[in-house]
Image (cartoon, rainbow, N blue to C red; front, top):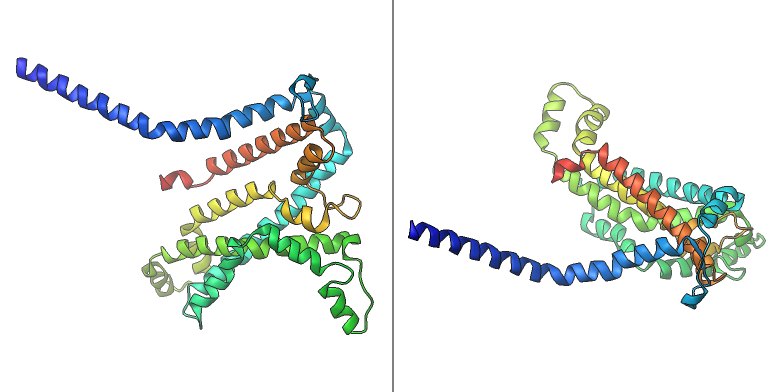
Length: 302
């Protein structure tokens, strides 16, 4: 009995030691998460209910839900949501469609397959701000695009004054930059599908479309949902191309939520409205992510 009691105490001491070691390892990460994530989120939520210029804490004035009421009643803010959705849905759809098609091509034995994979992935690791600045310089009155038009005997275009072209260039740039990462994930999913399934489909008489619909898409559904979720989150993070290319031109038709959040905080010094918009974006992203997780198979990957 004494021996068994000593063994139990020894096991308990080991467990306590392991628990202390685990907390010691986790402590820096918990401190980092609390200081740089939780506290800023709480601060943003609180400031969203205030009228504050962002400089002196004693100037903070609580105004309740006034900022949120203005967001939902002012048509200007409703247009910002609409612009964000237009940009986001267009970029999401094109990135997923072309990313999947490119992945289908890249898993085959094509000429210079490794080079092509790298070429499509490189844009994703280049600074978005740098790419956006280059495109903005291309669209100036003396930029390369207008030089090409002049060389063809045509007149210059005021690219920044036309909403269609601003949407076109920003969407094209965003899709080009995000295509590589999306393609890479789809390639991983396609490579995990056993070839036996396709052989069995051929034996049963399934054509290429039927094999795609009944074998490929169901097998890569978790990857598809992951790409969809991350792309939907990215919908509300469009900022660099708006700031550096269109700046909301023409007449605010290309302004989006993140750009407005930036302007309210650092141009208008209305930190309360900026934080209120940030809170709404956070809620929307959390809701969309929860819905997609609920109705996807991502939980099966655990």
